[in-house]
Image (tube, rainbow, N blue to C red; front, top):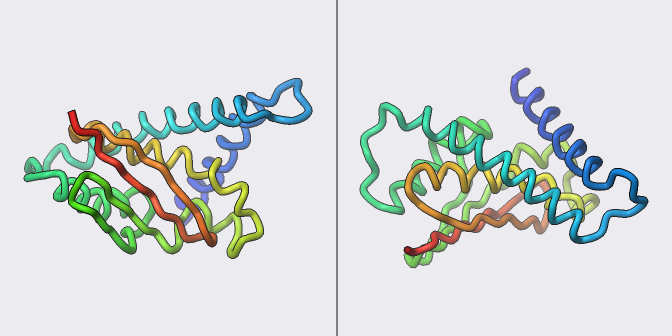
Amino acid sequence: MADETLFEFLHMEIVSHVYKEQQSGKEVMDNKDRAASVSVLEGMGFRVGQGLIERLTKDSPSFKDELDIMKFVCKDFWTKVFRRQVDNLRTNHQGTYVLQDNKFALLTQLSSGKQYLDQAPKYLAFSCGVVRGALSNLGLDSVVTAEVAVMPSCKFQVVIQKL
């Protein structure tokens, strides 16, 4: 329980630090600064995701296909990182997956409802990077985006890039 709280606090402080660094000396952040902050957070998450998935899969047999990888991410990987499984996984069987988490750990401390909805994207960039990094290490190049309609519920859309 304590490690969850520490991780959530560390995550909020990292987000705050990255945004303050980008804003340094300016009164208001423009879209370019926000995009740079999201990129930095996503890059951090990417590296963390690569490392975590490497540890989790070192003793696992190889996966059959893309769907098998996504099921592993939703069950085992998500549980290790966010302490619960994804609530729902949907796919169109053409390389697009939607992962729904109705109580996303990194948003539960922020708010319930729509009060801080505009702040949610900056707290999701790291998580998108974690998922993208994990998939990358499993051999799937992807684009991961997140959307929030009502907090703390969150949908991650994963689009697998075909080579």
